[in-house]
Image 1 (cartoon, protein in one colour):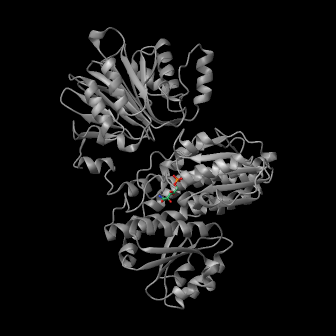
Image 2 (cartoon, protein in one colour):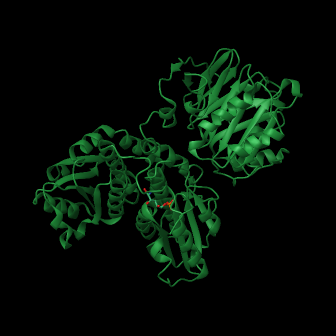
Image 3 (cartoon, rainbow, N blue to C red):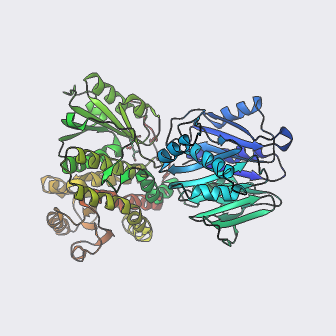
Length: 610
Ligand code: AGP
């Protein structure tokens, strides 16, 4: 998630831009830049940008000052194109400067079209393409920047918040929104745009949240909002009462809760440009595998990423019929594994910096295996160490307890499984089409679940005093039981265990009594009857059962004390929905206990030590 800020008024823009970007640093970024127009400095705005932190940009601005009273600033979280000076925003084409948050899905086609028309590109980014589109629209006769942006938007598909300025029209900023957040700040003789209220809260509390499919023309005297066809929209300004700290969390109490709610968007962003509904296939950028040569796949990971890998085993074996093993990275690296060129090792890591996973990759490469990394941080150590890299687009995950990174890992692995299955010919075109259709519907279904927080909050109050929890699941729900237990213990400090439901009778059933809440994953599917009999075993011993089941299940209520329903989806994708109530339950239990949810004791966001 990139950080965006624009200013137009009577004061020097650069200090306001840098100050606003500093307020967005918490979101994580790998480069930064500004574009400022200085009427006294001649006809051109000055773009100053670089890889690295804001301090590097400020150092550069000492040598290359950017005076002027209109400008925009950006902090970049790389998605297309590695972190570098050239890939930093703003991007310029002729008189046009652009900053962008999101992903232009049809960027390759547009780049080819523009190159054929003579455009010269200086970066690997999708964003630069929009600067060229707007420049071309002006050259083709657009009467002003607003119309040039409007005509350019008609050619773009994907998620975006753009801010555009032109040296030919220095009294105007034009911004547009589709999926990525955008807000306008209103001042007295000065106005702002930003990706996040946090960036401008110290300047103004009067804001207008821009809606999907709206664009806004911002001048010193005011703002005009329209849809992408130019139809005016009248929008009321709101006064923000949040504190700056609350604003960083988007009004949520903790980053973890914000990130739980960001999951539908994160999954949608991870799917952008990768689902080809015409060919019923998947486009895996950054992956070029000779699938015929893959005899075995070994997932290696730690913690939550290990649980995602365990779900991945079911997805890949079911859809591609390639044998899969899953290893804890910290075990794999020491067990002298037997590997060869027919093995594909898949390293899953949100941070891309986990030392155990990195050392496991080194072990795998030493023994001749190919390595594919699935990570959330572009150009982090693990993707750089690997032969192939596939990125989830969850945006920076601030909460130590991983949530949106986990569900986007599952989506990424599902895409990999479909990609492999279509190439091993074990997955039919029809079945692939069904799965892809279910994948693109996931964000809506996920939103349905994450909006049901009130029920989970009530359950957390009812069971939050328990001294222990047991989570049970079968098949691909067993890793979800493990993940639910990990979430609960790492943020509430209450002991919790995840177990294969079929293992109950081999020991854990001794734990069952009226004080032990048992959370059971019981979605529609091949294990349903067996899981229901496990519920009966628990209740026969006075255990309290919370069942996670599929919407429309009218039977489960007779076997459980509480039921949490999630929408139905393809069997292989069910874990992406059933994990959501467990994330929320763990959050509300921890909130009930008052622990430090975003920074739990003893934990680090990225474990870069042995
Ligand atoms: C997840 O909630 C934990 N914070 C932890 O288990 C984490 O998943 C693990 O350390 C692996 O991190 P990675 O995905 O960045 O490699």
